[in-house]
Structures are given as structure tokens and as C-alpha cells.
Image 1 (tube, rainbow, N blue to C red):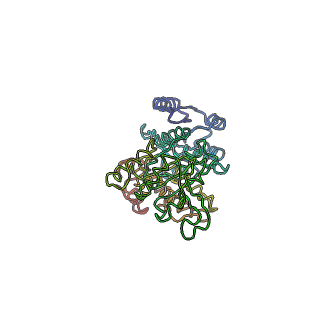
Image 2: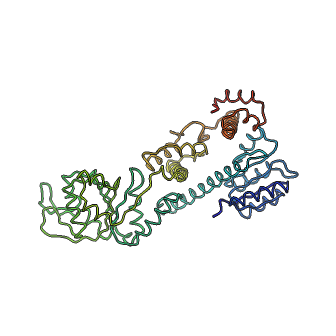
Image 3: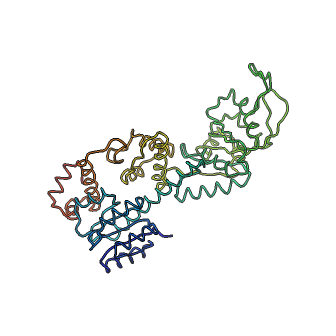
Amino acid sequence: MSRGSILLVDDDHDLLKAAADWLEINDFSVRAFHRPEEAYQQVMREEPDVVVTDIRMPGIDGMTLLTSIVRQRSDVPVILMTAHGDVTLAVKAMKQGAEDFIEKPYDADHLLSILDKAVEKRRMKQEIARLQGLVQAGDRVEIVGDSPAIRDLRHRVQMLAEVDIDVLIIGETGTGKELVAQALHRQSGRAAGPFVAINCAALPESIFESEVFGHAKGAFTGALNDRQGKFEHAAGGTVFLDEIESMPLGLQAKILRVLQERMVERLGENRLRPIDVRIVAAAKSDLSGEIAAGRFREDLFYRLATVDVRIPPLRQRGQDIGLLFGHFASLAARRYGRAERIVSADLLARLGQEEWRGNVRELKARAERFALGFDAGGSEDSGPASGDIPTLPEQVAVFEAEVIRRAIEQSEGNTARAAARLGIPHRTLNEKISRLGLRAR
């Protein structure tokens, strides 16, 4: 599979061929042009994942090509190359919409890294747009993510949905166990029936039987009428038993009987009523610890776990974090009538380094706060919020700081090499680091 489609533009035929060959060897699909006008026409015909263009060219230069592409194809990232790089030109290019800026002669591996990030960012935006389209069309978005673990999860859910068998879902708090249960239901032959969720931890033991199995008139004080329980109410559909590990032992025996016989007995009655439901249960662990401690029936576990679905925690699928964050932030902005904020690469990088003990639930809450402007994760991360536009000097300072920070990182914290990379005196760089509040590590 291609790492991405790249459109290269450079008036130097030898450098153009060398760069194209290097990228193709590294599994990129490349279209190379030495005339900017031909490159622009190709972008209009077929959008690449990334455009990489030299700045200094006769006739139409790279800055003009950048402006034209941004105007007509704003979602196509443009990376500029030049042998005459300085902070001023970098600030100008990035203010006009450039994705990144690289100096000649460039490090070939560094170019690959920049392209991988740009391709991933573009594909993330496309996936977010696709998900938003589904939401706007009234379709339910299923399990969001593009990591191998999530692709495997979607495949397993699709496979199990076609088989009318009970399922145990295992996943940490906040991983989306109910979302997976709903996906199993919606993709199954029971989709037209009800989906009834029962939180075993939230339902008091004293009313559990009445709520779940139903009761007869006069079964207890206040039982003025016969009442159908949740299992009967879910006829033709799915019952979701969430936090099954929290169910008291006495009730576990009764649930086991329901699973085995597919019959319920209402409280206060002496007759069994058949039920037609699929049982999907969820637990935070594989229950072996609960069984060993005597808090969970082993026979119930084996009855539930004929097949299981294991949801990976967010920390094990880091490549989904940006997609999920952008998706939730965009939905929140639309829901609350706010302008969508820019999610910077720096913010995405820091999000990827967090532990996310609350998993997707925690990430969603963070994204919604970000969308509302209450938690940007750092004032420099998000760019301006709607109605709060920084002054031009402030924006220039932000761009300058980002360029210097990147140069220092590329130079592994060596400010002398960073200064040489930026084309400015070492002393000037140190002054800028001090003025902008940066720290060389």
C-alpha cells in the first residue's frame, strides 16, 4: 500500500529526478513536474495527498503556486523547499497556508518524516469529514478509528453480528463497550427490535428482579398492575448487561437460568414466560480475578463467554487519537454553534503522549472543552478562537517560535546547529529563544 501520493515541483531536473526516485523507493506514489503551471493543472485534475515545491523558480514561483493551491484546494497540504530559507520567509509561507518548510540541502529521512505527518493529517481530515457527513445524513457512526486494532474490532463485530449468539465484551472504563454492543445489535438480524441496556452496578438489588424480570399485580406493596420486565420488553432485540461483574451472586444464579432456558418468571408469578432476546454482557476485565475471589460464578462466565470481544485501550491505538479528537471537537463545535478550531500538530503530538486512563470517554470530554475554548491544552496549540483574533505581531511571533522550536528539535537541542539551519547568527538565535520564552533541551 502506498504511503501517499506526492506531487513534486522543482525546476532543477536532476534534483527533481533524485527526489522522485527516493520517494518511490520509500513507497510513495510520485508525480514530478519542472513547470509550476503544469503542476497546478494536475492538482486541479487529481488531488495528491501532498504537494512539495521549490520556492525559487523562473516565472511562477513556489509562493505563487502555494497561494493558487490554497485558494482552490485548501485541503491539500503544501510543503515548500528552498536553498534561501530564513525565518521571515518561513513565517510568510506558513501564514499563507504552507503545511511545512524545509531547507535545501535537506535530510532525506527528515523529508520522509514530514511527508508521513502531512499525509496522515490530510487523511485524518478526510475521515473526519466522512464521519461528519454520516452524522449530517442521519446515519449512526459506528466504531471510529483506523488503527489495525480497531479495524480488527470492526471486522469481529461484523462477523459476530451475523450469528445470533450471546457475546461478552471486555474493555476498560471508557473504551466504548456500549457502543460496540449497539454496533452488534444494529448490524444483526435483530436491528428492528429494541436495544435494552441494563447497568448492573446502578440497579439496586432490591428492585433488580422487578425491573429485569417483571412482576405480577399484588406481588409487593405498590404493585398495582402486572408489569413487563426488561427481558420481555426486549423481545426480538438485544439485552445489554453492562458491568456484569457488579451483579450480586444471588442474582447471577437467576441470570444464568435465564440464559440457559430463555425463560423468565415474573416476581409473584408461578409461570415461565419465553423470551426471544440476544444477550450481550460487558465487563472491565476478563473476570478471572472475580471468579478466583468468589465474587463471580464460573458457570455464568462460561455461559456468557462463548465468544468475546476485547476492546483495546486508547493508549494501545495511538494513531486513532488525532482522528477521534478532531471528530469529537468538530461535532461539539457544530452542536454548540461555535466556529471549529484548528488542531495543531503540536497539540496532537502531546495528546498522543498522554496515558488516557479514562480512554475514549476522557478524550471526548477534552475535545469538547477544546471546541468550546475552555481547555485548549496550551494557549499556543489551537490558534485563534472565533472572535478572538491575535494581532499580526502576535501571529508572527507564534510562527517564528514554531519554526525555531522545530529547528532546535531537528538539531537535537544543539542551538549552534539550529542557528546554522535557520541561517542566522548563534547569538541572534539565543536572543530569540529568550524573547519568545523557548527552552533548548
